[in-house]
Image: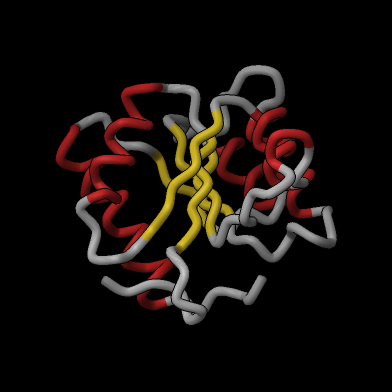
Length: 148
């Protein structure tokens, strides 16, 4: 199993309120060749608290990659993305928007907010698994991530 250059597991933040999608993502990454640790939060407010290391997240390791759903309770993914990409401390963290929407306006808006990529979640289980594996392969094998 490979890890980051520092030898620690790759930190992934999944911001997702659908328990089924959380379970599928967790299962797919569990079988990975890559040593990883995934933290899951179910809404945008909690995501920003974790990223800013506030309250119960004070000792949290900042993620190497964020998988972000757009349709979230409390604070939606577009707001979260905007806050991440305008924050000097957070903006270099790659954000993969992983959502059910294939609406052109959502795609354009998230790229305007500096998302690193936009992926429409497949409804088919095998395709969903393939997408998560492709994200993992691309972001942790091919791409050179910024140091924390």
